Image (cartoon, rainbow, N blue to C red; front, side, top):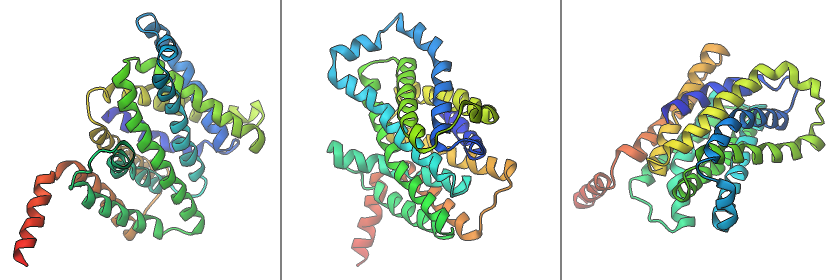
Length: 296
């Protein structure tokens, strides 16, 4: 899971620099097509053991879940890629990590699961950090930040849905291939009328597309599918959010991007919310609440 976070953090650089001759939908289409081609041999090998398509034909719920993975992925990556036209890598990476507190919240409201008491402090701290981070930006960057926050809802849904789908069938390579194809198809449907790129437009961006497709899609998302079979959705969200740290380090190193103090404070608070969400237990929060209640 940490390797997936590292891959995704590094890919932010390719995403930011890969739109000189193509638009965000073109980049998304290209990277996921390359990712699908990377996954194809592994999916074919896995197909010989367990047939995902056959299982989907038998189980409509599994079919809907598997296809929805691609739809949710497009929602997250499409908004994120578009946002990088307006905001910097560090903002995009840290605001993407907003899915950490969103995972238990969505689970509670849509899946009727009880929200642990320790999640609320993390949500509040994360919201304050997000405000500080985006509040230092100009209007264009703030628009990009809003797109990133919108995409975080899709990423949270994607993490929760993986937990459900992987609990029904253990075919990570076929699922990763399927969600990549669905994402590429949807991106293509937006790309053709809105951006109208020619095949030649993709050639200058091929190194970035290859890196994003092979490393982030082929390796990163497959590792996520495999790892989430052995951990909870909330824990997975915490570990995967390390991509924001890696992305910020890479953007400072390779793109010379810097953050003002208040934005750094926002990043720190978002990262602190991630730690609070997992390392502070519900019992510890109850003890603090009871202490102040008795003090009154």
